[in-house]
Length: 264
Image 1 (cartoon, helix red, strand yellow):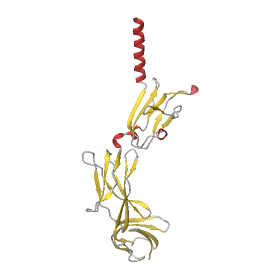
Image 2 (image 1 turned 180 degrees about the vertical axis):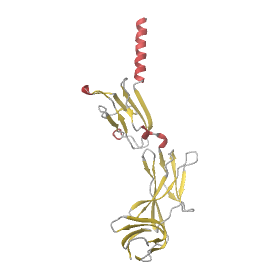
Image 3 (image 1 turned 135 degrees about the horizontal axis):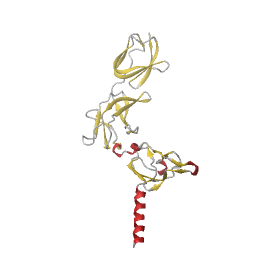
Image 4 (image 1 turned 90 degrees about the vertical axis):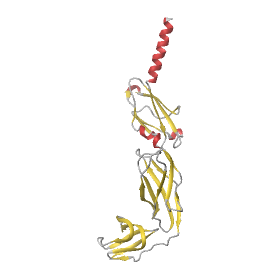
């Protein structure tokens, strides 16, 4: 009877110690791997703190015989947004450290619905599914062969609602918009493109030779660069003050085009 008690007690102690040798992290995969600091206990015998790493009960092939290593989710074919449980088994006399566990924070994961232009209000509208942090949405428009930031919209908590809108300034003919969000962990998410064809009359420069003022035929977003491609100024309006700008040639991005002007 005493022998049975001792065996039972030892089994209990072993189970208790085994539980103390686990670190478990749960979250949502958002495109970034985990980085782990792993103490070397005896380098001569290649003994380290961590014994094994499991992701969703699958033993990983990560290089754990190292002072630091990466838990690579891509090797396991984990899909973006998939729930993950990471289990790290380690020895009792040490404890590994995960230095960026926040990249698996499930509360920061969300998906975009495709943005669209509302025909009644002419506003760019979109919504999200899921929760989001308080970093703002960045509204971008494809102009002059690049994506240009045209506005920011503050996020709302999921209780307030997940519908958003932004009033854009259209250029003539084809317009392309998208919404971008970068959370506090650096994870970036971009919506699908929204295309909209404007029937507004195409803009033009009143003159390619200017002295103190540059004039457009109507209000427009614009950018000005010198001949070497150095940024000079940007803004929105029908005229641009050139009085403090040196004489020479400049590139002007406006509406849906780029032209060269000469400051006299």
